[in-house]
Length: 190
Image 1 (cartoon, rainbow, N blue to C red):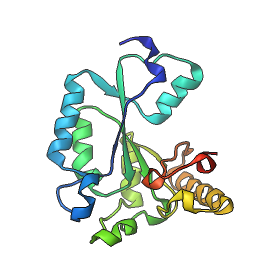
Image 2 (cartoon, rainbow, N blue to C red):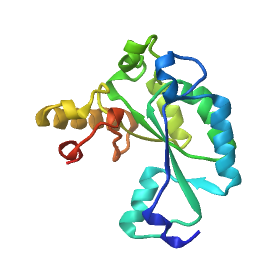
Image 3 (cartoon, rainbow, N blue to C red):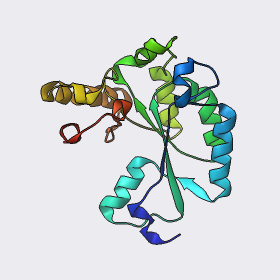
Image 4 (cartoon, one colour):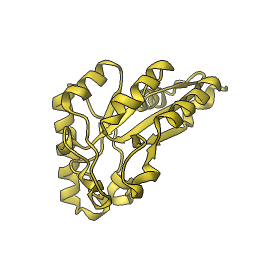
């Protein structure tokens, strides 16, 4: 793979690693078996993972990233990540970045309520144990609200508060953000 790989990074985005859940959310779930087969395929193809922070550091330093790299991200902080994804990631020595909804940690995914039962989210203790395993964390807002529906003051407060909650609890800078629902525009990006 050429050294110029620094400028391009495939990012695979996941939500739940589970077989059960509301039918209307099926597109946001991958079964543990399929997830394992996807990670196995990446491994056999010679891919190694890189966290978003590692990639950004390489971009800033204009340092080539060697080998075939991919970033694995997980939105929302579903608790099945710990039981279903982590063993697979460990088997292949893969890292991941998880985007957390700061004010819902240890609770349920209320944003899924219109589809049926809300899945449980990771607790702070679980998140801290994942941090010691090398899982990277980023922000995914305070309550998982569409950011384009927020005014500029509300958006600024949400991102500030989310970052403060996560940084205080995890003791590290939170430098990344994933937009809830992928919902963004120029104003949100600024």
